[in-house]
Every structure is written in structure tokens, then in C-alpha cells.
Amino acid sequence: WMSQWVFQSKRVITTSDNDMINVQDYQGADVTREVLSNPNGVLLIVSYDLEKASTKALNRVIDLGNQATTQYVKTVLLTSSAGHDRNFIAVPAPMHFEFFNVDDVQLKMLVRANPGIVLIKDGVIMGKWSSHELPTVNKLHQMLQNQPAKSKNA
Image 1 (tube, one colour):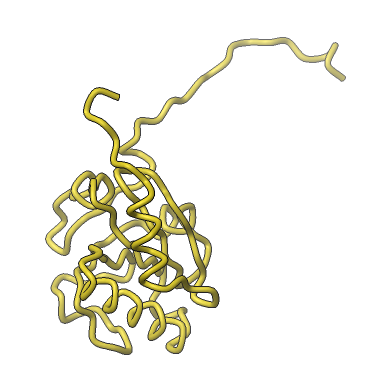
Image 2: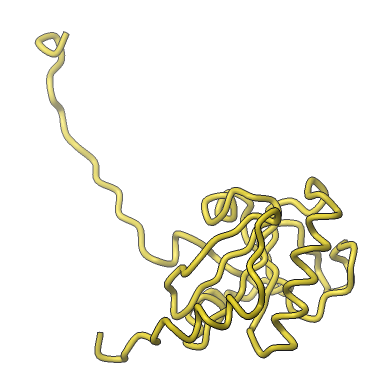
């Protein structure tokens, strides 16, 4: 069948780092670098659709996020269900951390679980978990301490 085809051209599409995920605050401002390039690390709670997520699972990840926040681990919620202000988002438990809006397809590329968590430091993914197998806050701290921050010269 190859003998019946004639090669015309090829097209190569390249993407920049910013095309992979775009994090916005509730006012629509791009905060991708501030969130993902944190040199101290950040715990991302990811739910591409809060309405489809289990209430029990959301409670577990929000509780972990609240614990992490009290232990000085920066924590944020990434969702495509964000509203125009902080009070619009419907979650089953009080959150003591910020939320940001990200396209649902980008969130599914980041972690398939709904909800799930991702630990990231200086733009490097250190771990991913579903709501069924959450690490302890001490484990998160240990992982962050064992991963050195990127040097400015690298």
C-alpha cells in the first residue's frame, strides 16, 4: 500500500512549557509560574470536575490539604469547576488554601484521578496519588526535603 502513496510534506508542531498547563486565578490572570515553579514545593489537589468527584474522596484530599497547610506546605486546589469568586466553588469541607482554574483536559493529563493530588517542587513532579492512597503530611515533608531545589545556573 505504501507504493500507492506519495510523500508531500511533514508538519512538526512544537509546544512551549506554558502550553502544557495554564493556571489562572479566579479573575483570569495567569499564575502558572507562581504555582508550579515554587522552589519550596506545592501540593496540588486536582479535581477536573468537582460535581463528578466523590464527596468522601474530596473530604479526604481537602483534609490532607488543610493539614499540609498547617504544616507549612503550600497547597492549592486546581479545578475546571472554579467560579468567579472564592465562595462560588462547591466543596464538601472548608478549605484553608487557594483554588485556581485550569482546563479539564490539562488536569486529566496531570492526574487521571478525580480527585487526586500531585506533589511538585520547582516544576518537577515528585509524586502523584489518587484519593484512595494518600500519603501522610510527614511523607510529603520528607519528599520535599530530599529533593534539592534547582540551581539558578542549571
